[in-house]
Length: 324
View 1: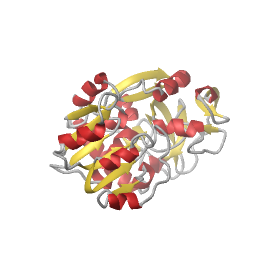
View 2 (view 1 turned 45 degrees about the vertical axis):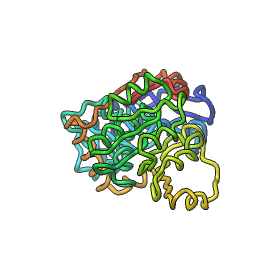
View 3 (view 1 turned 90 degrees about the vertical axis):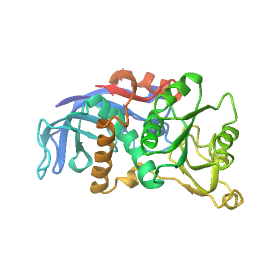
View 4 (view 1 turned 45 degrees about the horizontal axis):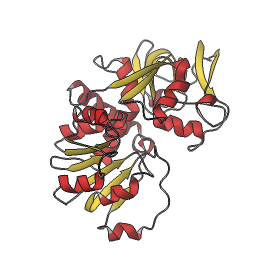
């Protein structure tokens, strides 16, 4: 099969993303060959492109996509040609077709279209493990979601609200505040206009929130700690503003016996059973209308450089997909 692919031969800015065409071999044992219909764009792709999260070079970027099974390798019994599938965590997604281990993909229900699947697998399963595993949210939980109008943020706010949580969120503009508010965030805070720590304290009657879901990193982490109640937790699951510098763990005791974790989706879905469980919960939440997947933008695969520029400039909202 002939395919188009986006590859990097060196790390750097968006200009290192190279559009190439090549022949894809048949799937090996335990693999399936996919014709991809939509590819998700995520900030982790930027980390790989810049070398913050190093990949062996040359490398094909991208971690999630949806598509149709075209062929199956030896030993694959659970999937058949013609099945619609998606996956959340497998490098080499920036392509019109690919081979992938069969145990990394999940079949798509009829009610989930390909574009939404590609837009939600990584982000939606990230929201799943944060809300259902890292700090299980229940009715009455007070949460703070940074980047509440982003891809993970919009999903997490809706899902947390559906679970009965009081959802606070930080955003960079009033337009993003309106978007977050329309997706379950009861209290959007425009951090460019007011001190989000003071606002969180006011909204919680001085107590603080139970958990902060922080994907921003360096610019927010120290103040995320200040938003917590005693024994609260910060789940630092990204670093769009840069890595958090080393800090004195004694700070955690001084601020109220706080907890900090640095989780990754890869760990939470390392077992096939957990991937299936997470996907099932995500699909159910979407099909019930508890979570709406917002595709904020689409780009042709060959325009991936511009997509990366817009993502880094925080011009995107919701989820963004690339169309092969």
